[in-house]
Amino acid sequence: MPQRTKVTGTRPITLWLLVFIAAILVVGLIAGGLIIYPSYRQQQEVEQQYQAGVAFQKVEDWDKAVESFEKVIALDATYKDTQTRLAEVKAKQQEANAMARAVAATATAEALEAHYQKGLGYMNIERWEEAKAELEQVFEVDPNYKEVQGKLAELKARLSEMRTGTPTPVQRTFQFVPLVSLANFTLDAYFADPPVGLTPLGGIPFQVPSAGDNMFLTQGCDGHEANPTSGEILMNVSYPRALYFLLNAVCPKPANATMGRLIFRFDDGSSFTKELVIGQNIRDYYLDTQADYVTVVTDLGVQQAWSGRSKMWGGRATIDMLTVPLPEQYQARTLVGVMVEDMSLDGTGSIDPGIMLMGMTVESLPELPK
Image 1: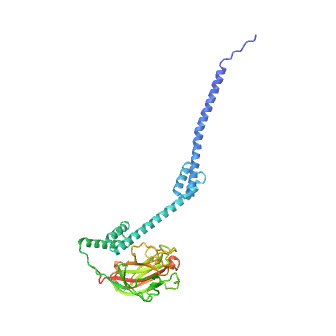
Image 2: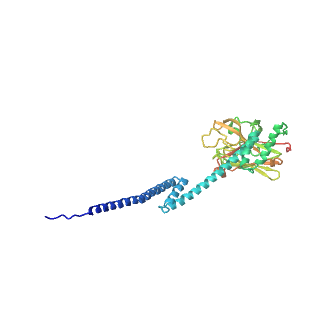
Image 3: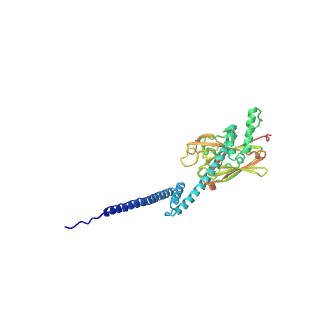
């Protein structure tokens, strides 16, 4: 009978070997996962930030595009074309920031001029407190802006006089300036029953001839293309304080374009210029126009002096009064001429806008106040 051979210890050894190998495999898999998984997650985040940067670049959101591409670079400095894109969006970001600064500076300049002009407008109608408030806003931003310091000093003196009850009496005189030398058209061709003769308009007396040509119309639309583009009215007025113009336009556009200017000449050879800007201090005489002509003004130095009907079109018409206070340094001189200059061809690119000058009065002082 055959005998069995007894084997001892082999099976347990094999089993433990298998367990050991399995353990090594498990540890390896876990270790590999710990290495591979974070790398996969990082690649996902890199791609997501890259795609976000591309999307922001397309919609020109430069700040967010820079932020996204910089995150990509921080994770993978060589990822696709990120370096190139980052350089491009940074350049665009700088351009946008420079433009924003320029716009802000322009807005500040426009705001200063708006407050300054409002202050002058309030001074002209003797609303001293409102004028002081407007000019103080200018002074706070730029103490050297134009003549703001002198105007504020003048206002403080006025207000002090009012508070103490001892204002310096000032005699105001008005001198009518005839337009005969320039007049080339009649008001009643444009207006139904226009104001003529000696008549107060806007609180200021004007003398408008009742017969013959009584207004000056520069080159413009409606068949006036051959009219002159400039003309000067001569005078001899000492101590001029302010001038008042009955002034409108025909076919004025676009808004904020300079269509002309008034040049004031003095006996010492000096001069002072007032620009005529569409929508600021000059507008269309016909308020019911169906065209895109400008029918509003923003300058407080302009007020409606007369309202009525247009003889030509039948709708509402206006005659505005533009007040031009002369700077103090000119008030001790003699005013010898006022030139009306139509610059619309240069300022608007068209001869269509024309200047309508319908009356002029000069306010002067018998002597310069002490």
